[in-house]
Image (cartoon, rainbow, N blue to C red; front, side, top):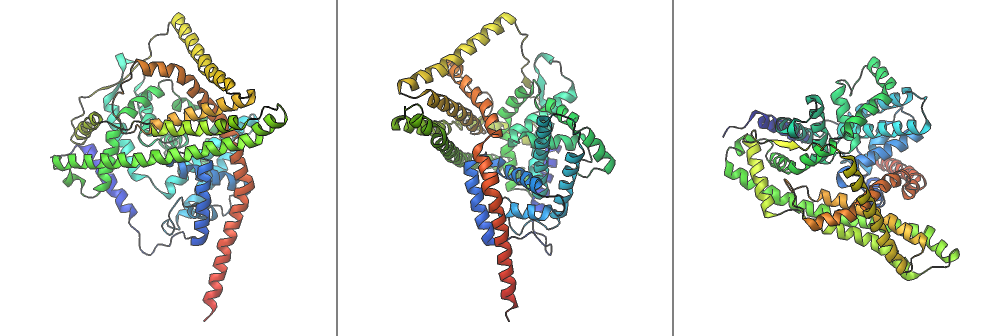
Length: 528
């Protein structure tokens, strides 16, 4: 059976990805000391518990963190080699696999971002300049990650789904949006849905799309980019936070599962996919096998998310309890209670555990729908399917006002009911405030993880009346947690302690350990 041209093109990209993984003989690679690497890798695991992130963001987050620290404490000269070595020692990239030529590429990237930071307009408010710096370093971390581990197959699958969705997606009732704007929103939504890429990575891809020479800009282009950096940031913010963006994302999220399965099958058959797919029965078996495999991996991912997120919440809650709640309740208000302390420390992590472990991942009906979608995409039968983006109805001020009042009442009821229950359990006012703070963060974090657990669900999810009632009273808590999480990310005391009081001395020790072992190895070789 003849495959469509776009599927053949996708298959060719997966073959190119497979060939890129084959080791090249005679090319020197970046090597770090194994003992130092084990110590550094152990630290990164501890760090991952305290500063928990979703698995697909761990490496990029580590690159950004190390990049910020080294740029703050060092200079751009000879920056790349110790920087990449630290990433390899931490287990973020494999030892003895990255060609040493990558150091030159990373050095060039770092110098580019140093230049942009140094020559961007400096006449704004301090807060605005700090935000611009953090924004740019996030983009730099994405570019560095993709340079050290080129995501050939991921970007090929993203482009495949984007091209497919451009043909299938339309706004409801011919909504008013230019084709270029629509395509841009499809691109952003697919990247968010398919591989859960963060904002900085998507911005990096948009910059590459907007500026063809972004990777190696000429000096004139670099000067222009630096002078226009705040303007570029604002333009991309508008794209990322488009008023229709969430509607595009929700649609892509409902139909990304079939593309993920196609990617899995291509990964298993990178060199013979065209021949393999000529047998529809073999393709159906492959869909079933890869669906079961992805479901099993998803279960493991959810269990790890449950463990790490629960431990992270527990550690933070214990720290707050010992630093704030216990001293104030014991020595200021005189309301200290061991029972209250126990409930205050244990309930938030248990709530996180419950939210994550109760996630619904699939159904038999869902599998059949996914099978049909995959077969239609692979064999070019999906052209007639049209997917609609719902256009918001015209707002009615009176109705909008009533809904806003209802939402405010649900907000007051939700937090009021919890506060009343805690008061009856003899919680002090401070303990109630801290408890509500953690419950809101847990509700938001747990909901995000639950959404990740539904990555194999396709199409619309049925929601009954009881679900609507539950939403009415839980959404205020979740949205509060969303706002609080952004503030905590800026002012997380544990992270500050790790970054400046632990991590910097630790990295100095690790580099000393590696050099000391290298010195001993050289002396041992001299004995003959």
